[in-house]
Length: 186
Ligand code: ITT
Image (cartoon, rainbow, N blue to C red):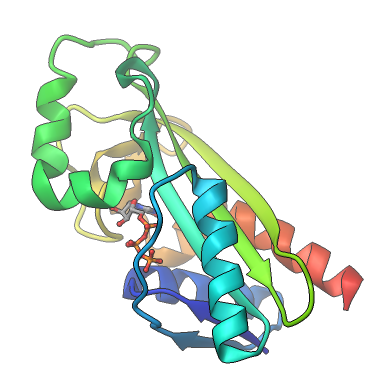
């Protein structure tokens, strides 16, 4: 069993669905600690180390974000704050003059931090490519999902079910790397 530390219930739902595919049981705890400002990797390492020492058991944490190339990777590590302030409509406004898929290129990135008592933390990076849509579409998923368009699927993440998103999302990719490592290191 793995303990996932997060305050975001959407992440829990997605992670549970992904772990089911790999036959690993997931427990969820919201420790409610403040994240340091830093890269996804730094935040994941610090969070995993803190939580595993505090709970004295193996844990994973995740730090994720949306990185828009034309905006120099904004909102990136500020994703949570930007979503709560200017939101999807604010992002769309910033992208007004950018018309092509290349100009609207973006990535979701997810870094899983794993730590257990008496060991050093490990991190696993997952990414998925897409383009920022011209308008919000779909009411599934959460946060930036309605503006993250995947050309291959001709749909935004907001139009995909959890199961569909979990076939290839940043979170699926980072968690799959973690699970493969975990199974061969146990
Ligand atoms: P925890 O730190 O408690 O896990 P959080 O919501 O604060 O939850 P992050 O620090 O990882 O999570 O912030 C990432 C933000 O990026 C998140 O709040 C969303 O706004 C956005 N985000 C991350 N993954 C996403 C996804 O799959 N779909 C849409 N938005 C996502």
